Image 1 (cartoon, rainbow, N blue to C red):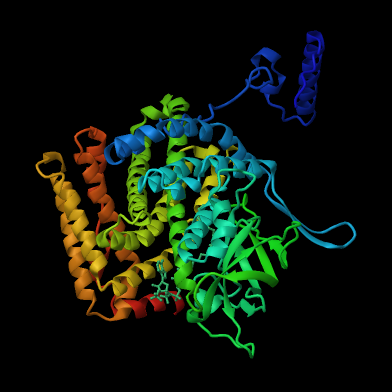
Image 2 (cartoon, protein in one colour):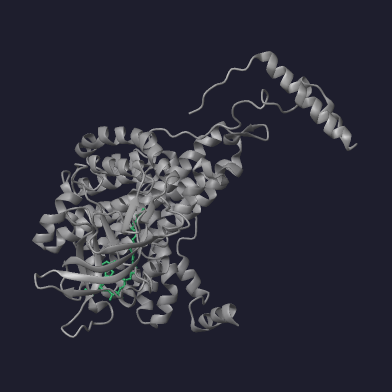
Length: 621
Ligand code: UCC
């Protein structure tokens, strides 16, 4: 709190002339004083009365739903009217709340990061995790707003998932990363729902999907151990010892456990046999459910070793955890841990993507608002065409990413309500890793370029902007790095024997056919169509090539899948009767970029064995 002290005017004047006299004396005493110091008060450039109250206008947030025109027009085109009408009031109110109250709480969480008190004053190990009141408030809001529940209520059939994703997309950039525990909670609810384990279902599912803050639980997803997080089959050392009552005791060290204040967690471990031996590799892993605390709030034989010191996501209590006999229930069949938890991975990957696009939207909104007020070189930034071009390029990236994420959530909604046909399921499986890896990279690009658009202010901590860049950097890392996800795309190709890509190309053709006869979109359609055909050809041909070539191409291949598909989505939207000229321009611009990275690089010999050797030499010789 600031209080105002009233000082008589005459005293201020005396103080000021005293200061001026002193500075004149100081300058003159070393003989190098400049004339300006000797001038009188009214000639000074700087004084407290002259610098004014502020230098720049801070960017302001409007209602984050009603101001999002690309989102609204997608919804109008795709979501049935009765659903749209039913959810409008809620999204409208929430759009205001995320721009105001929730945004303030999110900022507060960043300023008050979690702390760990390991011992009490008398030396007793207590492992008390302290999170800010704002963090707890966000948890309550998340429950009340049904940010997990909406998807599982299925009140609007397959559209429930889309509705939930839109709400989370609005919430994420204001949420102080409360979006992270929600991602894991959503994933856990999904795994438990499909596990068929009624005991665990009755204990946890109702809590995970509750709208009552006093009942609501969050879940952890403890997959990463000391040996690393990508190769889970190699990295998991935790063992599970069977107990006479049918439960298990887990012993292991979880190296990177996000939101360790969760009420429960899903985790992987190797079941020991009677001789204490375990099966190696991912076939030896089973999935377990555990509650982090007992009835009296004591930890379930878990020690919080330390909180992680991270580049960003500092709002999150990410911890190293020692499981020292933690009681748990087996949730998967023996040795089916990875396959079972992949349901959770796919949900958290969707969350990663919606966080990526939410972050892009927020950065662009702030930059837009800022440039209206900020004046440089004699005019407002908004009147500098080069500045506008820069922001418009970000906007096109953001729209493409948004439509990709919304389509993915539509497909997921169909799958969850048993309305997905085989093609939908294949497309969902293929697009999940593609969307995650691509949007994460775009989010980094937009965060970095967006920050630059504020000039030096973008580099100043208390604007809140640098945190957006730091937090974006985690998106390509957690839930599978870009390369790991590119290899997941190859896994899909291999498992479906290329069928997923045939479905993908057919889906693109169907979308392009909606633009038939639209002269403005013909060259964009041609670009996407050619790119899709060439990609299909490459896929078929590479089925016969060496695995090493395909592996080398995996990343570019995934980027090509993303860019071509986004092209088709933007064209489809632009071909809609109610589209705007800006939608057409967005599609045209997108399709002028290099859509098919992989085949062009393949033709240039980027993936052959000679390149592999030379790339190694560049690095190590
Ligand atoms: O970082 C973490 C928590 C962070 C907090 C959450 C934030 C969420 C974002 C919110 C934003 C604010 S937890 C750590 C995350 N870790 C990962 O993402 C792991 C990355 N590594 C992989 O994804 C690897 O590809 C592995 C672990 C899946 C590879 O394991 P394997 O065992 O070598 O893979 P296999 O043998 O190929 O697959 C085993 C089975 C197969 O099924 P079956 O046996 O029936 O043939 C695969 O088809 O699992 C199946 N499978 C999948 N199924 C593997 N991946 C998938 C998938 N994505 N979807 C469906």
